[in-house]
Image (tube, rainbow, N blue to C red; front, side):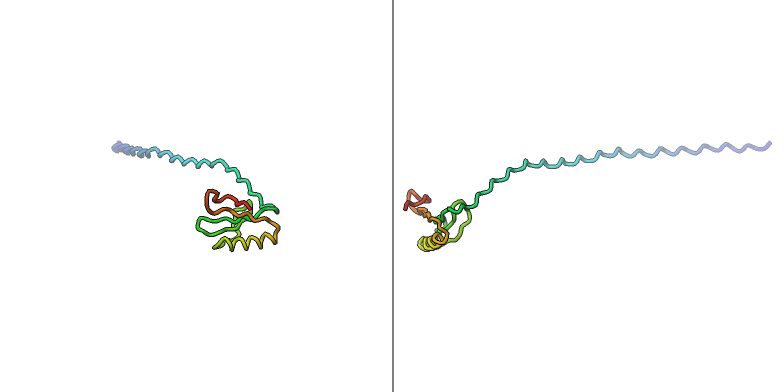
Length: 115
């Protein structure tokens, strides 16, 4: 009888691959910043009307300024009140507008001077 070959040892079992650690949950994305409520548009300032007046007033820096009623835009600045009055008179004659002079001193400072 032929000799029996020794039975081969069964191959050792490979250890199960180590389980990968559970993936960390993806970091939560920051919530998009809440959009601020839409601002109401500021009402547009009406353009000075045709009958608007010229205002001559003294600024805090000591200069005199000329502007039109209803407008924030200064037309021109002057070193003295006399220069401002002369220029305003010329502009008023050309456009048919009145000139309003603001008081620069006293209790009525900033108020329109009486004619």
